[in-house]
Amino acid sequence: MRQLSIIIAILALSGIGCDIAVEQFPANEVFSLTLARTRSVPADAAKNDTNEVAVSLFGTPDEPQWPSSWFDDDTFVGLVDAENLVRAAGPVSSEEDGTHLGLFREHCVTCHGVAGDGAGPASATQNPYPRDFRHGVFKWKSTERGEKPTRDDLRSLLKHGVPGTGMPAFTLLANEDIEALVDYVIYLSVRGEFERRLMAAAVDQLGYEETAPSDEAKLTLDSGTEGQEAVHDVLNRVARDWGQAQPIDVPSTYRDLQGESLSESISRGDKIFHGPIANCVGCHGPNGNGQAVTLDYDDWAKEYSTRLGLDPKDRDAMRPFRKAGAPRPRPVQPRNLQLGVFRGGSEPETLYRRITQGIAGTPMPAVAVVEEPNGLGLTDDQIWDLVRYLRAAAVPEPRSADGEDELGEGE
Ligand code: HEC
Ligand code: HEC
Image (cartoon, rainbow, N blue to C red; front, side, top):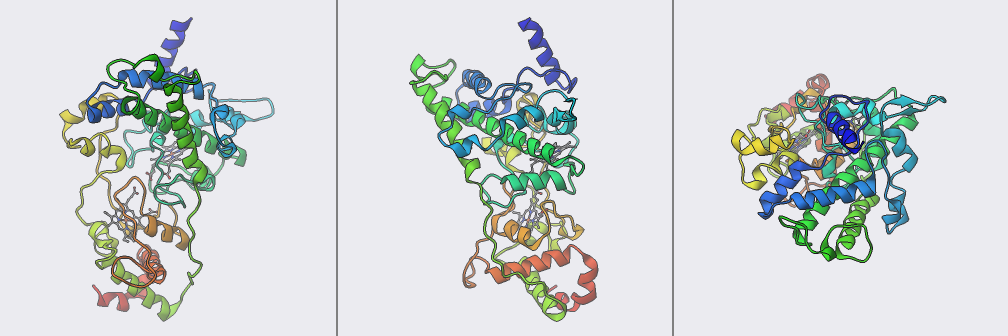
């Protein structure tokens, strides 16, 4: 019986079918390989014990659980609704009252994979790749660069999708289905980040090498040991990060301008875009046309390439990681801003946050906000000028209709 279920799990994980039972989340092989390279010790024992602990705490793709009793703080317990988890997980089906089950496998798994590793069967041809949630890093959000997204961010992401990428807008899903999927994304991300951090802690703090350490330091859920403390600490640290997510304040000084005052503002924004403080032109090219030559990668790809001193273009060097399931590293493209497609939204508030936080996981840097122009950052008014410039650059017509003369000077 046990053997049969393992065979089913292997079939399911190899992408053969999405609606049959999936017994296990696949372990994070790429991270364990990366860890072994950076620490110069084998990480298999750490990977296997971490995986065992993760199954006990988080359950399986068909029977997920939220490890409520392990959290120090009630707000961590409330991050995820355990009933929603069950609704979003498992094989696709409907109950008599019409409730949909298996939402993640129905709508998301072909791209994001069973474990949320971004390596679903339809992922390889996409650019950018579907997100690997296990890093816990998200791009299109209202919080500080290094922070998690809020529930609102995830909700709105699912409703609007990410225009210009494979990530669809789920406009037809009922609100309660969206809520269940938000819970499931948070669950997969917490689970995946817990797995990564615990594997690292096992090697760095508990003395995992070729084999597991002594009983006292071995990863376990049995109370009172060093190994159990590590499990508890890592889990609560990941949950705390999610519990702290807050949208950053945006000053309410934005005004819709018209006519000459608008073109003057756009023209100031143009100078800032091409000027030395923001140096947007360095990556986005003149007038944001996307033509600057930059060769850089996102953090997901860098982890198993440049950060290990490996060349992402070197096929031989990448082979072990590719075999372990990593996508082929591809350079990130600074956006052609004239196309008018803002993946994270084009509202002035959103663009203010984008400029002052940059885009997490990508080379796009943050610009410092300063009180007075001092050559080191931009004032709020300057940021609004830049926002008006971006919005105008993205829609060529109004720009040439009422702003060309002023813009022309600087070019
Ligand atoms: C056809 C492929 C595809 C499907 C189906 C899909 N996604 Fe995505 N998803 C993507 C891609 C591609 C990205 C990366 C977008 C980017 O980097 O800007 C992404 C990104 C995301 C992100 C990260 C956004 C951020 O701020 O960084 C989340 C969360 C997400 N998807 C959730 C889901 C959920 C939940 C579903 C199912 C309801 C789903 N996706 C279905 C392709 C897909
Ligand atoms: C080091 C290179 C770099 C610099 C400098 C840079 N960007 Fe970017 N920018 C990027 C990359 C890369 C992306 C694409 C990220 C992605 O979609 O994953 C991007 C995306 C964007 C987007 C698209 C956001 C969206 O919602 O789709 C905007 C707007 C933008 N940058 C504005 C700016 C502005 C304004 C500046 C100057 C303050 C700037 N960038 C400086 C690299 C850079």
